[in-house]
Amino acid sequence: MMRIAIRMDDIAPGMDWAKFGRFRALCDRYGVRPLIGVVPDNRDAGLEIDPPREDFFETVKELAHSGWSVAMHGCHHVYTTKSGGLFPLNRLSEFAGLPYERQEELIRRGREILEDRGIVTRLFMAPAHSYDRNTLKALKQNGFDRITDGFGTAPYLYEGITFYPISFRAKDTLSSGKDGVSTLVVHTNTMTEEDFRRYGEEVFPRHRIISYSELLAEPAVKRPEILRAKEYAMAEIKRRLVQGRG
Image (cartoon, rainbow, N blue to C red; front, side, top):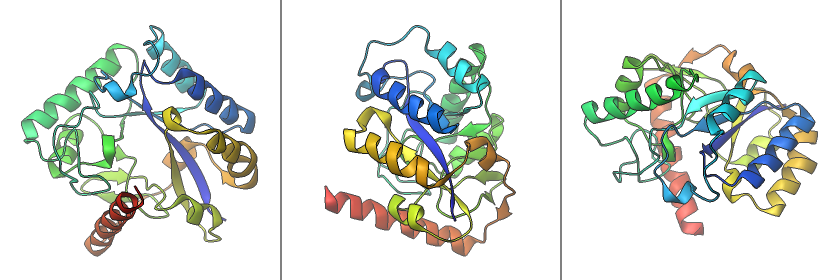
């Protein structure tokens, strides 16, 4: 049976705290310790749903101390280009398409903000899943050697960075009888009542859910370039399917 980790995107001071709290309660009930993608300096109005919490970073540290994993989710979470980069699930990015110097500045600034508040991580979560080779270079320059992205059923190495794949399609991952591990992506800001029901009654109690720290302990293998090309094509296909559905 597929082992499944959980990642939560768009964790910011002004997120929907009620929905975040509901999902946190589900995680606590089932002993799940997910990955949270923390925006160091949010400037995306779309993530400003509630009044920003002054104790935001203290809450992040509390979660980290209780076994949750933390990734840096960009810097400002503002899309500045229409590039899909190396993993084109979307045609917009905070990073892909920008010069190396600007990307390095953003990543360095994000890291400094988190570290000034006592949060240290080597794991990066790209807004809109979009990054390019300059992003990877800038990440390594700033001590990041892990990325939550890509497709597959095991962590893999690419350009000196370990990638922890996400699910191509949640229902296929949940129904898979194959061995392996993948990640379901959760945006609590936009969760519906049906989403909460599904996680509380189906996903968590009926599947082999692991804490993200267990995924980080999995050995990584080197991925051939041909499989990177396949991954790129899959991302393009998924983007077109989602756009077509919308």
